[in-house]
Amino acid sequence: MTSQRTATMGEFLVETQKAFPQANGGLTQVLSSIRLAAKVVHRTINKAGLVDILGDAGSENVQGEHQMKMDIYANDTFLKSFKSMGEVCGVGSEELEDFIAFDDDIHNNSKYVVLMDPLDGSSNVDVNVSVGTIFSIYQRVSPLGKPVQLEDFLQPGNKQVAAGYVIYGSSTMLVFTTGNGVNGFTLDPSIGTFCLSHPLIQVPENGSIYSVNEGNYVHFPEGVKRYIKYCQELDEPSGRPYTSRYIGSLVSDLHRNLLKGGIYLYPTGTKSPKGKLRLLYECNPLAFITEQAGGRATDGYQRIMDIKPEELHQRVAYFVGSTAMVLEAESFIHSADRS
Ligand code: AHM
Ligand code: MG
Image (tube, rainbow, N blue to C red; front, side):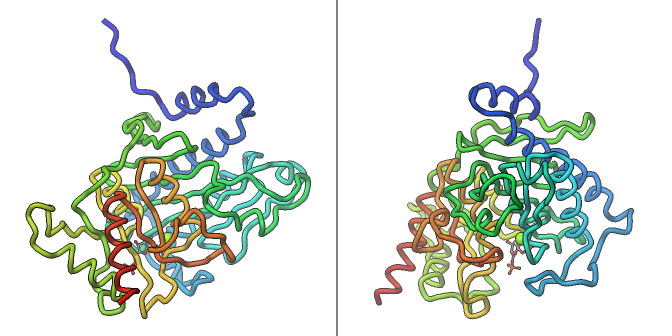
């Protein structure tokens, strides 16, 4: 009797590449670099309390946020992994003020750029709560043979060729899309291999979970306040009140809502007039994942992936998740604007 074994991510990538005979394997290599770095970060996070890697690094990133030692460690690990392969010509990261160009003959002839948040929600590591890595991959638009340029990074999300996240949770998972659906791989730590555990993830059209930092309620725009009150109202036929779930770790909150159905929102507010989350390496990649899973991602007014970026660390309001719930939130915002 033969039992079918779950495909590893390596096998999955090889099979996927076969479907595109014109592909030269470059994107597969980039995803392989991410897979390798994710395993290294996973290993370190798992023993973070035992090695001197918890806590504040005593520095700030360009956005004035405290850097944790794990932020810097994850950033360095992913950069090294990209640099050691020749397929990525440059990287933009939450932890770096400017993008990095791998300026040598090999990398200047590579066609991919990566934008990433190496360790999102990193303040959670110290208290043993899930964190994540978010990545977004584009083909460069500047000519090959020269160092990568800012314009290569400031592309709208609809030009992404692949995107995904790693969640370091009760198990570690790598979830990604290349524009043909979303697949999730769980790390089997005993063999150090990501195995296909969640093929073709679909976000439920509707859900009953809303995820927002309600401590910021007083700062929110009127439409968002009304939507939150609506989520809390009793209306049994429509399943309300909804359940409130907020980890404060975007990848974890989004991952849960993707699997169970729900909405995650981080609106503008008097505290963060442009929103908190960054368009290029937080919102766009997770919007690509969500849309590929059948969901919706907007800033309340327009599709996230159609926004033309103006700067590397641009912030934006974010409403993402089950299509029906995001549309509902938008309708509250629009009707408050009219009144
Ligand atoms: P970070 O990139 O500095 O970790 O910030 C992003 C995080 C998200 O993971 C999370 O959803 C959000 O910030 C939480 O913000 P808040 O504490 O304001 O609710
Ligand atoms: Mg982040």
